[in-house]
Structure formats: C-alpha cells, structure tokens
Length: 72
Image 1 (cartoon, rainbow, N blue to C red):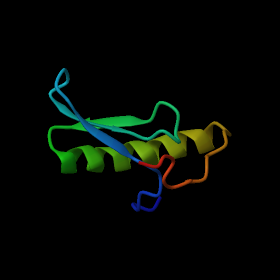
Image 2 (cartoon, one colour; image 1 turned 180 degrees about the horizontal axis):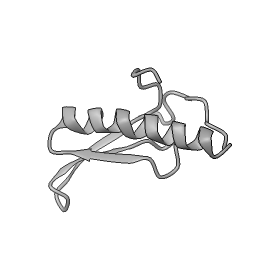
Image 3 (tube, rainbow, N blue to C red; image 1 turned 90 degrees about the vertical axis):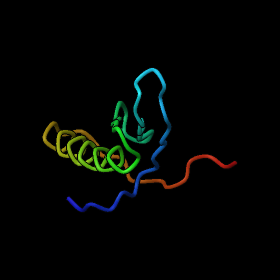
Image 4 (tube, rainbow, N blue to C red; image 1 turned 90 degrees about the horizontal axis):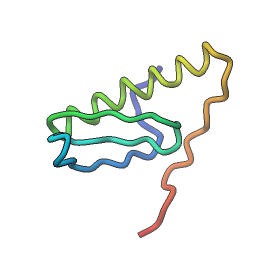
C-alpha cells in the first residue's frame, strides 16, 4: 500500500485526550491519535492502510478518495 495519503484528514488537538486526533471522514470509523502532530499523521497512515487491507479481506468496497469535502 502506498504511503501517500489521498483521503481528507481532519486533525485537531483534544484537551480531554491530551493528544492530537486525526479523523478520516471518508473511511467510516477510521481515526488515529498521537502526542505530536507528526506522530498523529504517521499513525493515521498506518490506520488507513489497515482499514483498507481489512475492507479488502472482508470483500467490502474501499471508497475512492474524494479530496477536499468541505469549503471554508
């Protein structure tokens, strides 16, 4: 699996978790966290790859990346 993230990532600081949270809205339930911004993104890469591999093994459809979903 290639390490380029093509899915939209929502990254924010969570006071209650004391960490950065990364959500991948195009992949249901796909989230990661990390103590630093960089660690959170690295963890998100692993979780995205795991999510896709699991979906393929289960015969489920893997959504194509749509890019930016919302506009400011």
